[in-house]
Image (cartoon, rainbow over all chains, first blue to last red; front, side, top):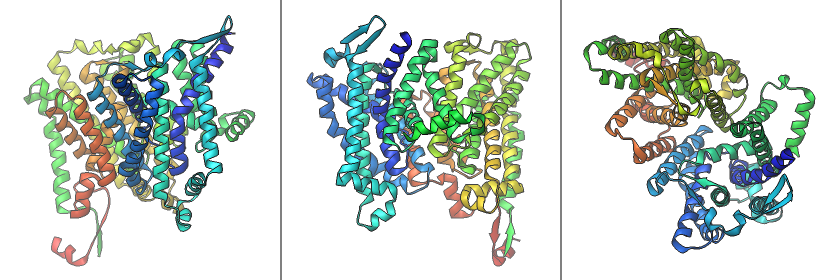
Length: 301
Length: 332
């Protein structure tokens, strides 16, 4: 029963990772770049929500609604000041520039808010404490369920946006071939800016959940980035639903790993990530054929 | 038209560098131990910058996980010293260990590209850091001292560490210098300039990158050894910190990615900044991050790369240059 419970808690945790990873996945899918400051952007979102809660006394959820337009604007600014320039000059430049940005965000947060840990848990209402005891060893927390539902709705909404709306088609066309898209009159710059704005807004949602689920401090970002990136890679880079599955796999690996040894939780996630990379790119000969086929069919699912 | 490698300036400068290295060896005999300790830090920075540049500048491999090898070097020293070998022998063994571990890592890490390689290396560093944290004999998460060095009188210890740092820096710089000047080096610089074109001309890109990867691991391992020898105490959260990667990226970007001299210049600049703003602090790191990002976006060849381009200046020549007949005569 403890294993079943660990898997269930892992699914909830993984849904949170999927939300964190979503923006990263979008930016990679559309622009083929990885924003190394993505985790720090999520933490920045958590701080923005925190400030709104402190100033206005709103609940964390209402404060998130207020913070959302701020995040969208930040996304546009990020695109226009850093990413657009870096896109033009090779594959290393976006990584270098966003790594620098990551250090800047962490330390500006340090200056503004001190290194103390903060939480949004107190301002999120009863959802943080409510839970249902299914059987003696199995409990479903309201927060875990909420994050899972939000994650599924978020990914479904993005899927609909990309497959059913004109803006979504334009985005997919630009992702497929920006030069050809330009030929038919699509302004790839504005498509990229929109994608980044969406990604940063979703990172803000990740920040909300981060703050409600646990605590955060100015240097929480890199860990969030690693988990988000692991989710993206496990699920298959560039695949949206893959990211949801990847996040959940990572979460389950961590909670099941914690059953072996509390300090093994994060390690188990890292090992899953490295195993997926090895199977996909590395010494494929080292892995039995059957396991490889199973993993690669999971990727395309 | 004539192809040449050396100019009068570069001959003078390379000779000057050698003389400077010999003079540096005398530093512990003349200066106080705090000066010696600071210069050891400078040499560690030079070593790290040059190694990171070997990987990113020539191999096109951007790693944010070189702290894995720094940590292996540092913790390896503590481990071997605890087994009873002399601490200085332990330092050499730990350097070899870092290089040896990089070979199996390279088998799969080098198949990754761009962000996957960058973050993949970061995750590998995290995994090694967790393994160290789980080991009580290595002080777990709280850190451990290299007590075996206490048997040496502080001034002597400081001097030995400095000489070791100098020896490591000279050896690794010379190794990279001669590697880049060899026929092998021509292929490395071809990979730097255009990987696909180099491959199509028959350059064995994967083997060349492995060479750089292992060299950089050796060098970073050596830097880790020097860190523990210089500070005598290490803990996982600092020695495996991604901050090392931030420093390396800053030094190489500001100095000049893919140039031989640039990273050395970058290390000296970072050292100067660190000694000026002794307390470090958030503002200093904001400046560091912003400068690195700005250089990546606006001046991707860094200070030295720009100077080199504008003035055609090469002080430690690893490439060749084409000289027109007239200028050649004038130079002669």
